[in-house]
Image 1 (spheres, rainbow, N blue to C red):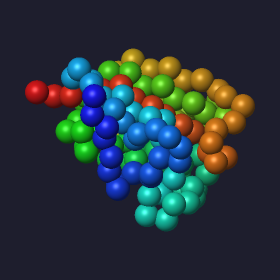
Image 2: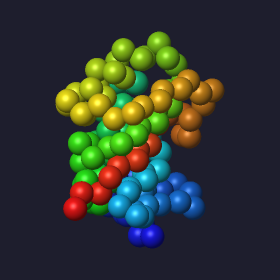
Image 3: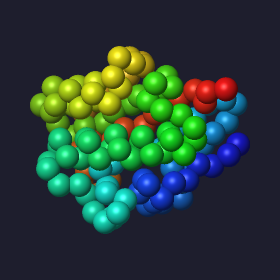
Image 4: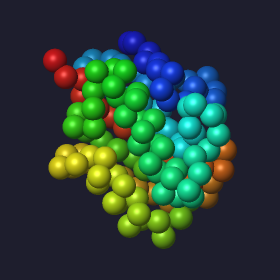
Length: 126
């Protein structure tokens, strides 16, 4: 098992890693919309946070030698399903034509007052 870390995504805010690489798979921890350069939640409401979440995940994937095209499964947590169409647009743009399995659930709250959190499972190429 190998722990993945990049300074291009927020540091873990607890006793966990940004991602773990094992048996040809990458398991990311949930990312919220924290801007790693400022340490603050991204502005722009749900849309700004969702963009930042995907930027953070892109950085973690890249550190492990992966990209969104390698994602097998995404789990998305939102505090308001009324943002589902915005989420689909932003997520679809990031994934381009790749369509991994996905679950989206509404939750009562997320860490640091975030409106969206996403974790991924990806295959490691090669």
